[in-house]
Image 1 (cartoon, each protein chain N blue to C red):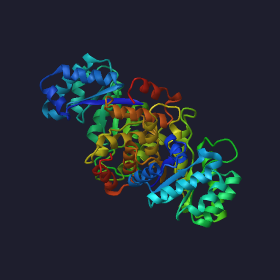
Image 2: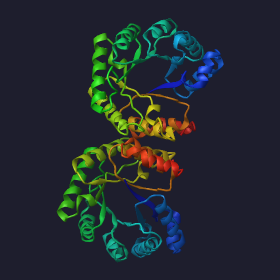
Image 3: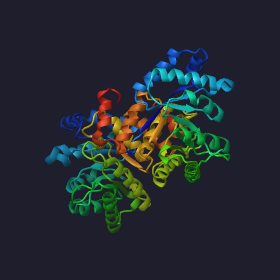
Length: 263
Length: 263
């Protein structure tokens, strides 16, 4: 199970402020706490800064890499931003994200291939959002085909079927769970990943919905997640979910988390 | 979703003491709190009292029925105990449980049919316990056939695929989840139910495992559960699970639980 730490994202006010003020101590602390909480990659995003995105992202990447050994997940929809920060990024790394929109697909995918990077690929094209399982799996199939065409190994492809807010589409979580299961079955070697916060948008007690969705997804084969590994209840749900999903031999991960007082 | 309140069970020390001392106030309180927490049936069990089981169970049933209007789930593996308490039980009611063991099947099933009772039927016969999905579904099929033969309507049949402790069989939760899904798909009209505490036996933080298993089962179609409806975290997980499983139109149940401060 690959954990991508989500906290260094400029959509969070404290992170945006830290970037503006070049507060390296704050960012290093966010990197270190996520690393010691079990993240395998650290997402870095400076998307709120528009014209300054590349400059801010470069500073973020340098700062995070000073603090921890963990690989980076470069988070931008903008191909030129991704290309411009690349000289600063240690290998291996991950790119978040491509879609089937031609501009992102054809300019980012080759960069990933050339650099041996893993890629998060969203089930999204130029059309309306994919709400049914069938639509999500069909987009996943096109992402797999594009990856093969460009020479990205399928084990470097992390498909996100994109869950939408249950407050707007009550069927979205089930459609996504079924899509995860079908994608994992139909495209051996490929990974699935997911952000959690969309699912609960507009609802009260959002974290409860997020962790409920995560545990259900673990029983369908989801093998990566973008999350806050320092959220104790979410982390406990992750470990319990892996246990229930028969992905924790001899209950060792679960018992270790208990001994570390993280359940 | 049918909630069967599990708390009036003589395997709980306080309940056994209340039965011994004929402490009606304690039992009535257990009945009332479960009723107001949302139980639809109340399980009553006096199985710890061996020779006195029928007498104790009769007293329990009378006491619970004085306190609440909720229907009873008569919990005993002993056909003669079930028959002897029947004159005390208001209609409708439920019987917990039959198995494919001939003594229980052929003596309890006709009692249920004659009395229009619902029946919990465990995926268990005289052989070793069913650990795989295939074995569980095969036993479920035999339970469906027996019900049809005896004239029990399938909508009165609540099949429990029986989850076993993950500490002994790490695959048991997934085998059970897959069995729930397959049973609901193959036998239209039939219900599935489950006790939750077995899954976590021998592990720390058992309630976390129980509620994780429950929420995953809700996304597979489980439509009844034996649980403690007064356990706030479990109840919150139930509501979040139904929401994620697309079984809560317009998020109304979830939002109601939030307003009642039960999330």
